[in-house]
Image 1: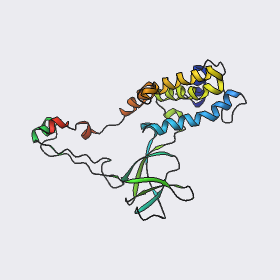
Image 2 (image 1 turned 180 degrees about the horizontal axis):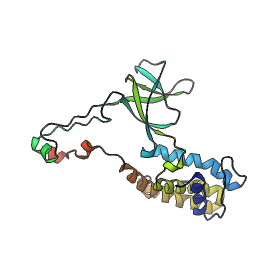
Image 3 (image 1 turned 120 degrees about the horizontal axis):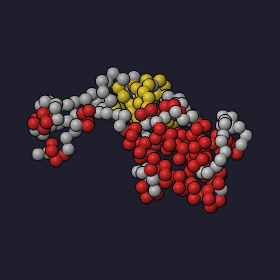
Image 4 (image 1 turned 90 degrees about the vertical axis):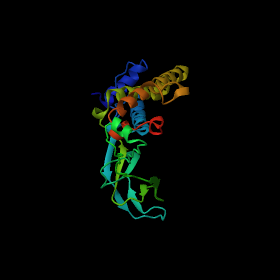
Length: 238
């Protein structure tokens, strides 16, 4: 699997830079290493924030804090490695999702292999808000006791990255490095080119390029059999 240095060197090679950095923590002393040390964490964490990647998804019980507000029943500390909260869950629930299929006709349920009884999953996802205390401490407010958080974590171990994510990260890093490495009009043009490779053209930003390919592949790592068999409106409404 690619290392941090591999990703940085791929990004530099994308720009036609022949340099090979051997350390960015600490930087080895070259300008390229300094640039990579500055921009690599930004590129990585930005991409982690943009999608609920399977390799970065974690769940953990939340640690309670003194609640300073009246609008929510509980206040919890955020995990130290959290990038994004995904869902607050009832830790005693048997399912992450509330999955209910109200069959208009039992025959439709039989077609989908469920018999005539509607499928009901335990509704465990709870309302919450992600805010900060007056001292800047990030917290989760919710009405759920003994809450469990599913969240996107900051992943520094590159061996957990999928091959497509590695390519995406290298391309995005190239777009950030282009200005300081190439400078001038060449840097601007290269930044735009590698941004398009990473995310698609400006008019379809986030719906093309390597990001879409990586996100689509990643989505295949998650399955909800009930929702995957949900009947479409025209069918249930007959």
